[in-house]
Structures are given as structure tokens and as C-alpha cells.
Amino acid sequence: QIFERHCTYCVVPGVRGVEQSRSMEAILQECLQLAASGYKEVTLLGQNIDAYGRDMSPRRTFANLLHYLNDNLPPDTISRIRYVTSHPRYFSDRVIDAVANLDKVCECFHMPFQAGDDQVLKGMRRGYSYDSYMNIIRKIRAKAPDASICGDVIVGFPGESEEAFQRTLDLMEEVKFDNLNTFTYSPRPNTEAADWDNQIPPEVQSERLQRVQALAVTHALERSQRYLGRVVEVLVEDRNPKNGDEVMGRTRQGRQVFFPGNVDELKGEYAMVKIVEARTWSLVGEIVDNAK
Image 1 (cartoon, helix red, strand yellow):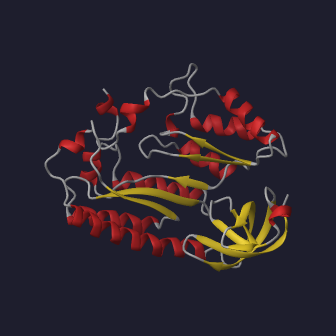
Image 2 (tube, rainbow, N blue to C red):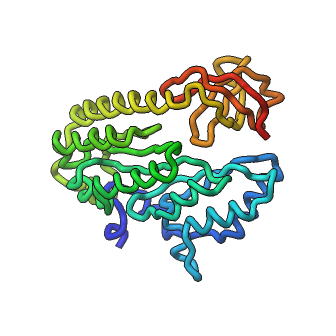
């Protein structure tokens, strides 16, 4: 039954057990406890977070949870809500609307696509196609145009031809991910794909991974450059470990930002920062004023 519902390469469902959703009230209480300890940002975590609430009675949705937290977290407590990870098969337009419209929910989507070829996706048992994935991306771009879109990709899945791999590159070119987690396929115990006889040679996997990573770097820099000259809200996390005169934090979209500042004064605070330099995975700025 696990194999009927889950990806053919993934070992997690066999070791995790049955999915269970925590009550919205319990999640809110934990957020309030964290806020009382000084935290301003939380990340909601689930292996497939879009499945939230389908084991509840009455049934809930993940969008219900986002609205509930956004409406019930008092001012000056948690002001940023992130989440991972979505599954394109179960992803709801209601989540896009929540991210686009709720002030505490950060404009960041983590949407693993794993492969661009429909036959490879079918072999993975992902439950969606190139076109249906891109339909989600188009909806995100229309409703939350400044949102970041991050993803995961696996290269060298059993049976992946060069033509099939090219479809992965095509999808990357169409989306232009802000950040992309890249992996080569590796057989995992007690998974279906591990027993197939059409495994891809390691040297082919490695070459494809290098091509994916090179393209991901190009796109990440392009996505960073859109911030140049803009003033963005940054939640300061810590000192820059490579430069003690700088602090580091993140934008609402999750981009890391470095700028001059006193960590003792700014850690845990919001600052408005003008971006003066765009790097592949980060930004450099100058403080304008404290935000909150």
C-alpha cells in the first residue's frame, strides 16, 4: 500500500509511519511559546505539507492552517511564517492565495519537481506532468510575482535518456529557480526503483549533475539581480562569520543578505536594507532604517 501512494525512489514513507496532523490550536500555542522566547519567525514542517488536515475530522486544509495562524497570532509576536515542503500533486490554489494575501506568510514557495520528462515522472510515480507543474508556476507568478520559487531535482533516475534529461533543463529554463537542491539518483533499500535493471552509470549521472548545477547557478544570479537598488525588509539572524563588522539575515523571500551593522543591536530585529550587490546565493546591502 505504501508503494501505491508514494514515489518509487523514496525510503521515507516506509520508515516514517502514518502521517498525522497536529491540531491548529496546538500549533498556535507552540508559536506563541516561541514568540515569548523572542522568536519572530517560524517554519511549518511536513514531508508533504499539502496533506495537512486530511486525516482530521472535520477535515482541514493547509490553507486553513495558514489563515488560522495569520489571524490569531497577536501583533509583535510571530510576524513571519514559512513552510516546507509542498508536493505538486497535492498543491492547492488556496495556498497560493494565502501566500499572496496574508501579511505574515512569506512569499516563498518550495516546489520540488524532481524531473522534467513525463515518462521519468511516471516512473517516479510523482503524479503530475511537466505541463501541470508549469501550470502551478504560472499561477504563482500571476498572483505573487515577487515570490521566490525553490525546487529539488534528481538526475540519473533509472531509464532517464539524454532526451529525457534535456526536458529537465527545459523546465529549469522556463522557471528560473531562486534556489535549486540538486541530487543524483541513488538506490535506497526497500524501494521499487532500486531493483530496476535500467540504472544509469555513475559517470553519466555525474555529468548531468554538473550541467544542472551550472544552469542553477546562472538562474540564481539572475534572480538575485532583481533586488538591485531595492529596499527590502531583513530579519537579522547573526553576525557574518566571514566579516565581524557585518550582520546577516533574510528577506521575506528567503534570500540571505549581508550588510554592515552591530550584531548586538540588530540580532533578532528587522532592518530596511538597500541592496547594492547581487551574488549567486546572497545579497549585499546598506542599512536604511530599522523596520519594526
